[in-house]
Image (tube, rainbow, N blue to C red; front, side):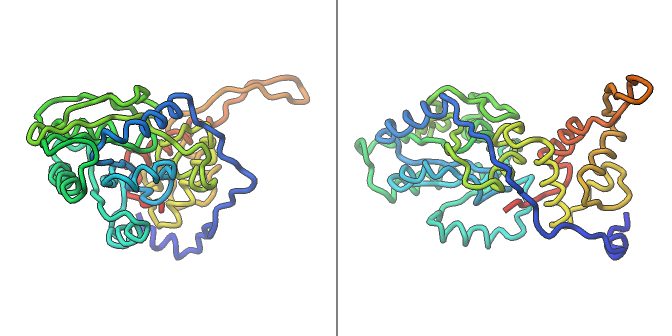
Length: 319
């Protein structure tokens, strides 16, 4: 695929995304409010907070409501799904996080059977705790951690990876591809024997208000908020804009487009035709009603978005 030649043929891409008057719908279910309240009330029993977030959006969408909790306990930020993220500028990511007060960061791929970074978690947590005063009990070496984060960033996968690594045991926490899977509040799960270490698994909690429309679209693109709160067409358009801006053109070959394109309508039409995603609709004409076959743009958008989430369009950094 001769993309360099194609780009030299004056393919013009948008320099900015038009957010228009869009808003991100409000989504803060009852289990989130309940979870946040119980998380705060249980802080006295917690030695360390582990915050899980998506490595593709290391700065966007981290819940500011967690901040007061993070200030009073040792804090480890785990940027998960690193297998899907372009981390070629990892040092600049770490420097910016440090400017924001986050000094302890680990990148993980918790779905991988063996991840060396997961092996580092327990020793790093022990070191963080031992370097801070114990808040609630004596010197016995057993630790209670709280896992927090917005929905669908891999908290359950992280817990299962810790158990697999340290206890050689299977799943203790349900894993799902959509936000909102974990709704039980503060389930206690053992993840290590030496030292004895338990985690409090918590439901994903979004801020009641997303800070900006662009942040909302990034969260939706990563599957952190439900697609319909933004709209599959908008998410797909932002994905196309981002891939072109980053010069990630694997979508061209995947969907047999021939060359990069800046029109989401054309891209989705091509995807629908290639995948056979069409629908029959009635059309009113001068000679009466007829049934015609048209591309199913929503189904095509969903396939495009899902391909990104599965890493089929290459590694991408959205922030």
